[in-house]
Image 1 (tube, rainbow, N blue to C red):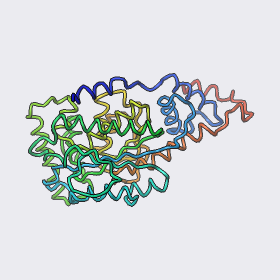
Image 2 (image 1 turned 60 degrees about the vertical axis):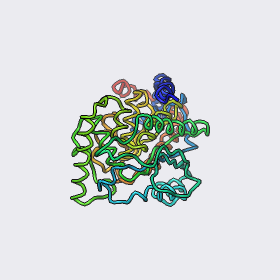
Image 3 (image 1 turned 120 degrees about the vertical axis):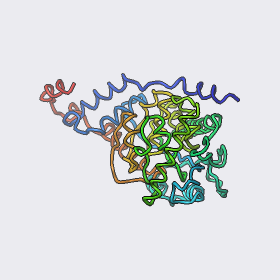
Image 4 (image 1 turned 60 degrees about the horizontal axis):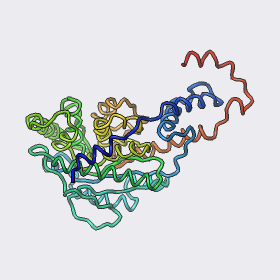
Length: 365
């Protein structure tokens, strides 16, 4: 099977969001009983949703967080405080609703789909969707993480998850992950895409001593040097993911691509999620119109990646958990944006003459 051709065929028809419907939403929101733009980012969210769905008034009844789980061979370099076995354990725990993200998701009635694309440790849980490409990746400090074909297969798994969400009539998606060592691979991928130094993108992940943190920076530097001398295409996202990435990042990239293909709004979680979103946009720039940020990650590279996407995080709660935890909160913000558009009265229906706003509106335009 030609996975390269399959991916190209699947993403070629991604459409830009509808500018006419966004203008219509802007006009309608401007007619509601409030000072112009007084609901700030909530108005921008509502306008963006209109461009995606083709409807001015939207409801987000069915919400789902897709969590891509995989292990990373670079953990043998001592870049993480947690053992590899935690990936499998937490993937299973998510299906029980007892992790940070899944406990909040259960409270708010949000669906979770936990997908194994590369967990290294054996486990027994039918609720984890088995789409394993291989058991973990190579150690990026000394070898490529994956073959090109494995990256393509992982991206297609992510797109399959988004296709399933479309069939299930999911209104909004969130993209999370579980994989020990994936802040290291994300940092390496981001450094390769952005041309920044390892020290500018490497953070402490789930927590490291000062010595382990310095080791993590040196490991990413080593991986980058190996990549730069490998002969790989430095502008090819598939090559970058093959040399430096992880199965989780590649599959997450696929979910973002698939969400855009199916015109489903999709929320970015933290560091790994934003790097995956950046990869998706490099494969098809039209994906950008379907993306919504959530929280500002504690990882220092996050600011670089989110800025490259032209987005700003909606909130900062000092979160660094991952899993899709920021998506849970972002969904509530998006629901608020939908609620005011669906339920708020217009100046006309409220019996208020809004002529006094004409000068302000002209200035805003």
